[in-house]
Amino acid sequence: MTVPIGVNLTTASAPPMAGRTTTPTAATAARTWTHRHLLDVDQLSRAELETCLDTASRLRSLRETGALRERPLIAGTTVGLAFYEASTRTRVSFELAARELGATVVDLSVAGSSVSKGESLADTLRTLERTGVTTVVLRHGASGAPYLAARSTGLRILNAGDGLHGHPTQALLDALTLRDALGGSLDGRRIAIIGDIAHSRVARSNLHALVRLGASLTLGGPPAWVSGFGAWPGVRVAGSLAETLEGADAVMTLRVQLERAAGGGVSSLRQYTASWGLTEERMHLARPGAPLLHPGPTNEGVELTAALASGPRSLIGRQVTNGVAVRMAVLSLLAA
Ligand code: NCD
Image (cartoon, rainbow, N blue to C red; front, side):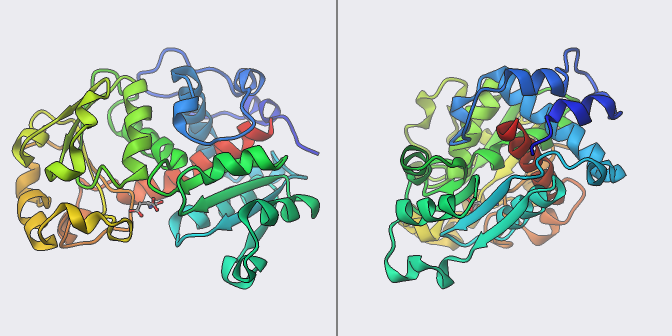
């Protein structure tokens, strides 16, 4: 049986969000949430994005106090992890999130499954459904795969990254990390995103989420990786690293997606690092103390230095921790 999210969250005390005037209660959130799937963040209104972040923030506090163990929020749900592409942090944090909330978790290890015998995605997912799986967390190399899965099965589908299209929970955890670091709101904040925007599902989802939450974005990178994005509302494309960083309240840099043919956009990785690689010295071009984010995995020495990745500006560890909170929030909202 699934326990309504409001029962636990409204009775527990979580610290209020700094600088926020309206924080919908989790009970309201559960009542107003209408989505069966999370396919990308573009399906969510600003209020729904904020519901996800507020719920994540509360669940993070409850997890820290151990309160979640006493009243599992999605007990009776069976969550299947179907990762057709490599993943460490996303898979592990979905698994931990589902377990923290009392779900049963099955990991479809693709290499050892019937996928290796040629079974189609839809057939594999329908088989999981017949065994009693109710929700599938899907990562797939083909853009749009989660939409096909949602259409061809009765499962609830959570997109954990599809091709170069979207990565909604990454955008949500980035938004939560930024909101915490920037005093509780993204309204009017300037965020710089640097690198391989064109091949990045993280960037694409972040463009939707961060702009809808009130931020304006400046994108920087080699022309082949940023061209065309200036037409998005709230987004500007800069011509140099200095111009990208100028006035930025926070900076996000991305991994070069070599497995998605990104190598074609630059003459060499060395050249990319020379023009766009972040160092502590270059970070001084942003606002004083501007924090640094990276979705991981990082290629230290390419998009940023090792010192910067582990230095005081870095929120990379915080992003990973928030990944569990955001995935707990989404799993409980979808089950509500
Ligand atoms: C990202 C991904 O797989 O889309 N990683 C992640 O989920 N944390 C980014 C990347 O691979 O560069």
